[in-house]
Amino acid sequence: MAIVAETQSRPVLVQLADLACHDLGADYCMITMPTPRQTAPVPVKSTGTSLAIQGNRAAIEAMKQCEIIVDCTVEGMIHAAEWPEIEEAGARILVICNEHPEILERCEPKAELGPKVALGIRMLREASEMRVTSAAGTDLAIDLRNAPCGGTPGFGTTPGAVAHWPGGLCLAFPGPNTVNGRIVMDVGDMNLTFKSYLTSRIDFTVENDFVKEIKGDGLDAELFRDYMEAWEDPLAYGFSHVGWGMNPAARWVSGALYDKRDMQAVEFRAWAGNFLWSTGANQYAGRFTEGHFDLPMRKCTITLDGLVVVKEGRLQGDLAL
Ligand SMILES: [Fe+2]
Image 1 (cartoon, helix red, strand yellow):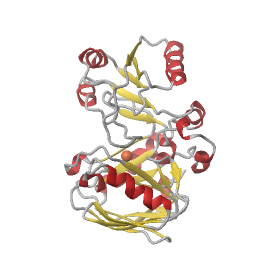
Image 2 (cartoon, rainbow, N blue to C red; image 1 turned 60 degrees about the horizontal axis):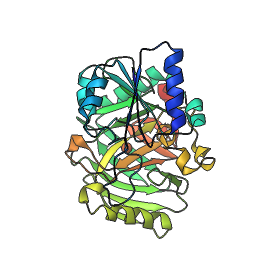
Image 3 (cartoon, helix red, strand yellow; image 1 turned 180 degrees about the horizontal axis):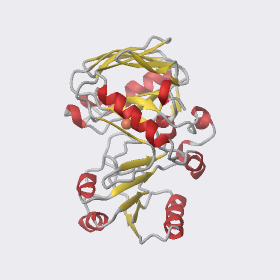
């Protein structure tokens, strides 16, 4: 095993990973990279794209020799440029998200979530259309045909498996020209780039995968528009992924109890029964950009080919916990 970190990593997580590997009797090494300089025009948060490895050959080759990578980099290496090569060599990865350890403790991955998440991913794969509605006015249609689907219960057991802790979500990356409609984010829904709850509505018009209009008089809509514009990149307005959370230990209220620097806010991506949508890079639709929003919403109804999987924010049927 290798514990991979960077100079800006949360020290307690690296220490806990070290103790855990020691307790397990693992044969492990620790790799710490210098956190690179920033290059983006605005702060970048919660991308899942760690830049810490910086193409460093020694670090990459060391990781390729490992069975398990315990990833304590700030952003995590799930979408890192170096990961495909390491995965190809047979390593699997557990991203320890940059959360306060209390959050990780409460959201500890549980084996019973494995089959539930697997079922959700299968349902997404087999579906042709996702429809999302809400009392606030959301009415979104997503053509899921040929969309790559994934997710994680928070652990992986096979070579190449990718997991993050907290885990528990199912998602799809819609292909080109597949997302249309309207999304109304309501008070209490979350903007995870800002790590904040909305206190005013934001009304989005979506045409062929792109947010065309961001309406709303409140500060939330204004900050959203401002951050988008800062990228000066039309691709930042494109859809990335859509899905829902599955983790019963994740708590929507948790954000009221922690400082922003105490959380990566992955808990809210995983909270059971949310509708999680995002803007930014979608490699499956051929769009690459650094701008990225993950936006979990409450009280939405999600259907797959007419079958209700989430009803007003609650998981249904065999997905319910
Ligand atoms: Fe995302």
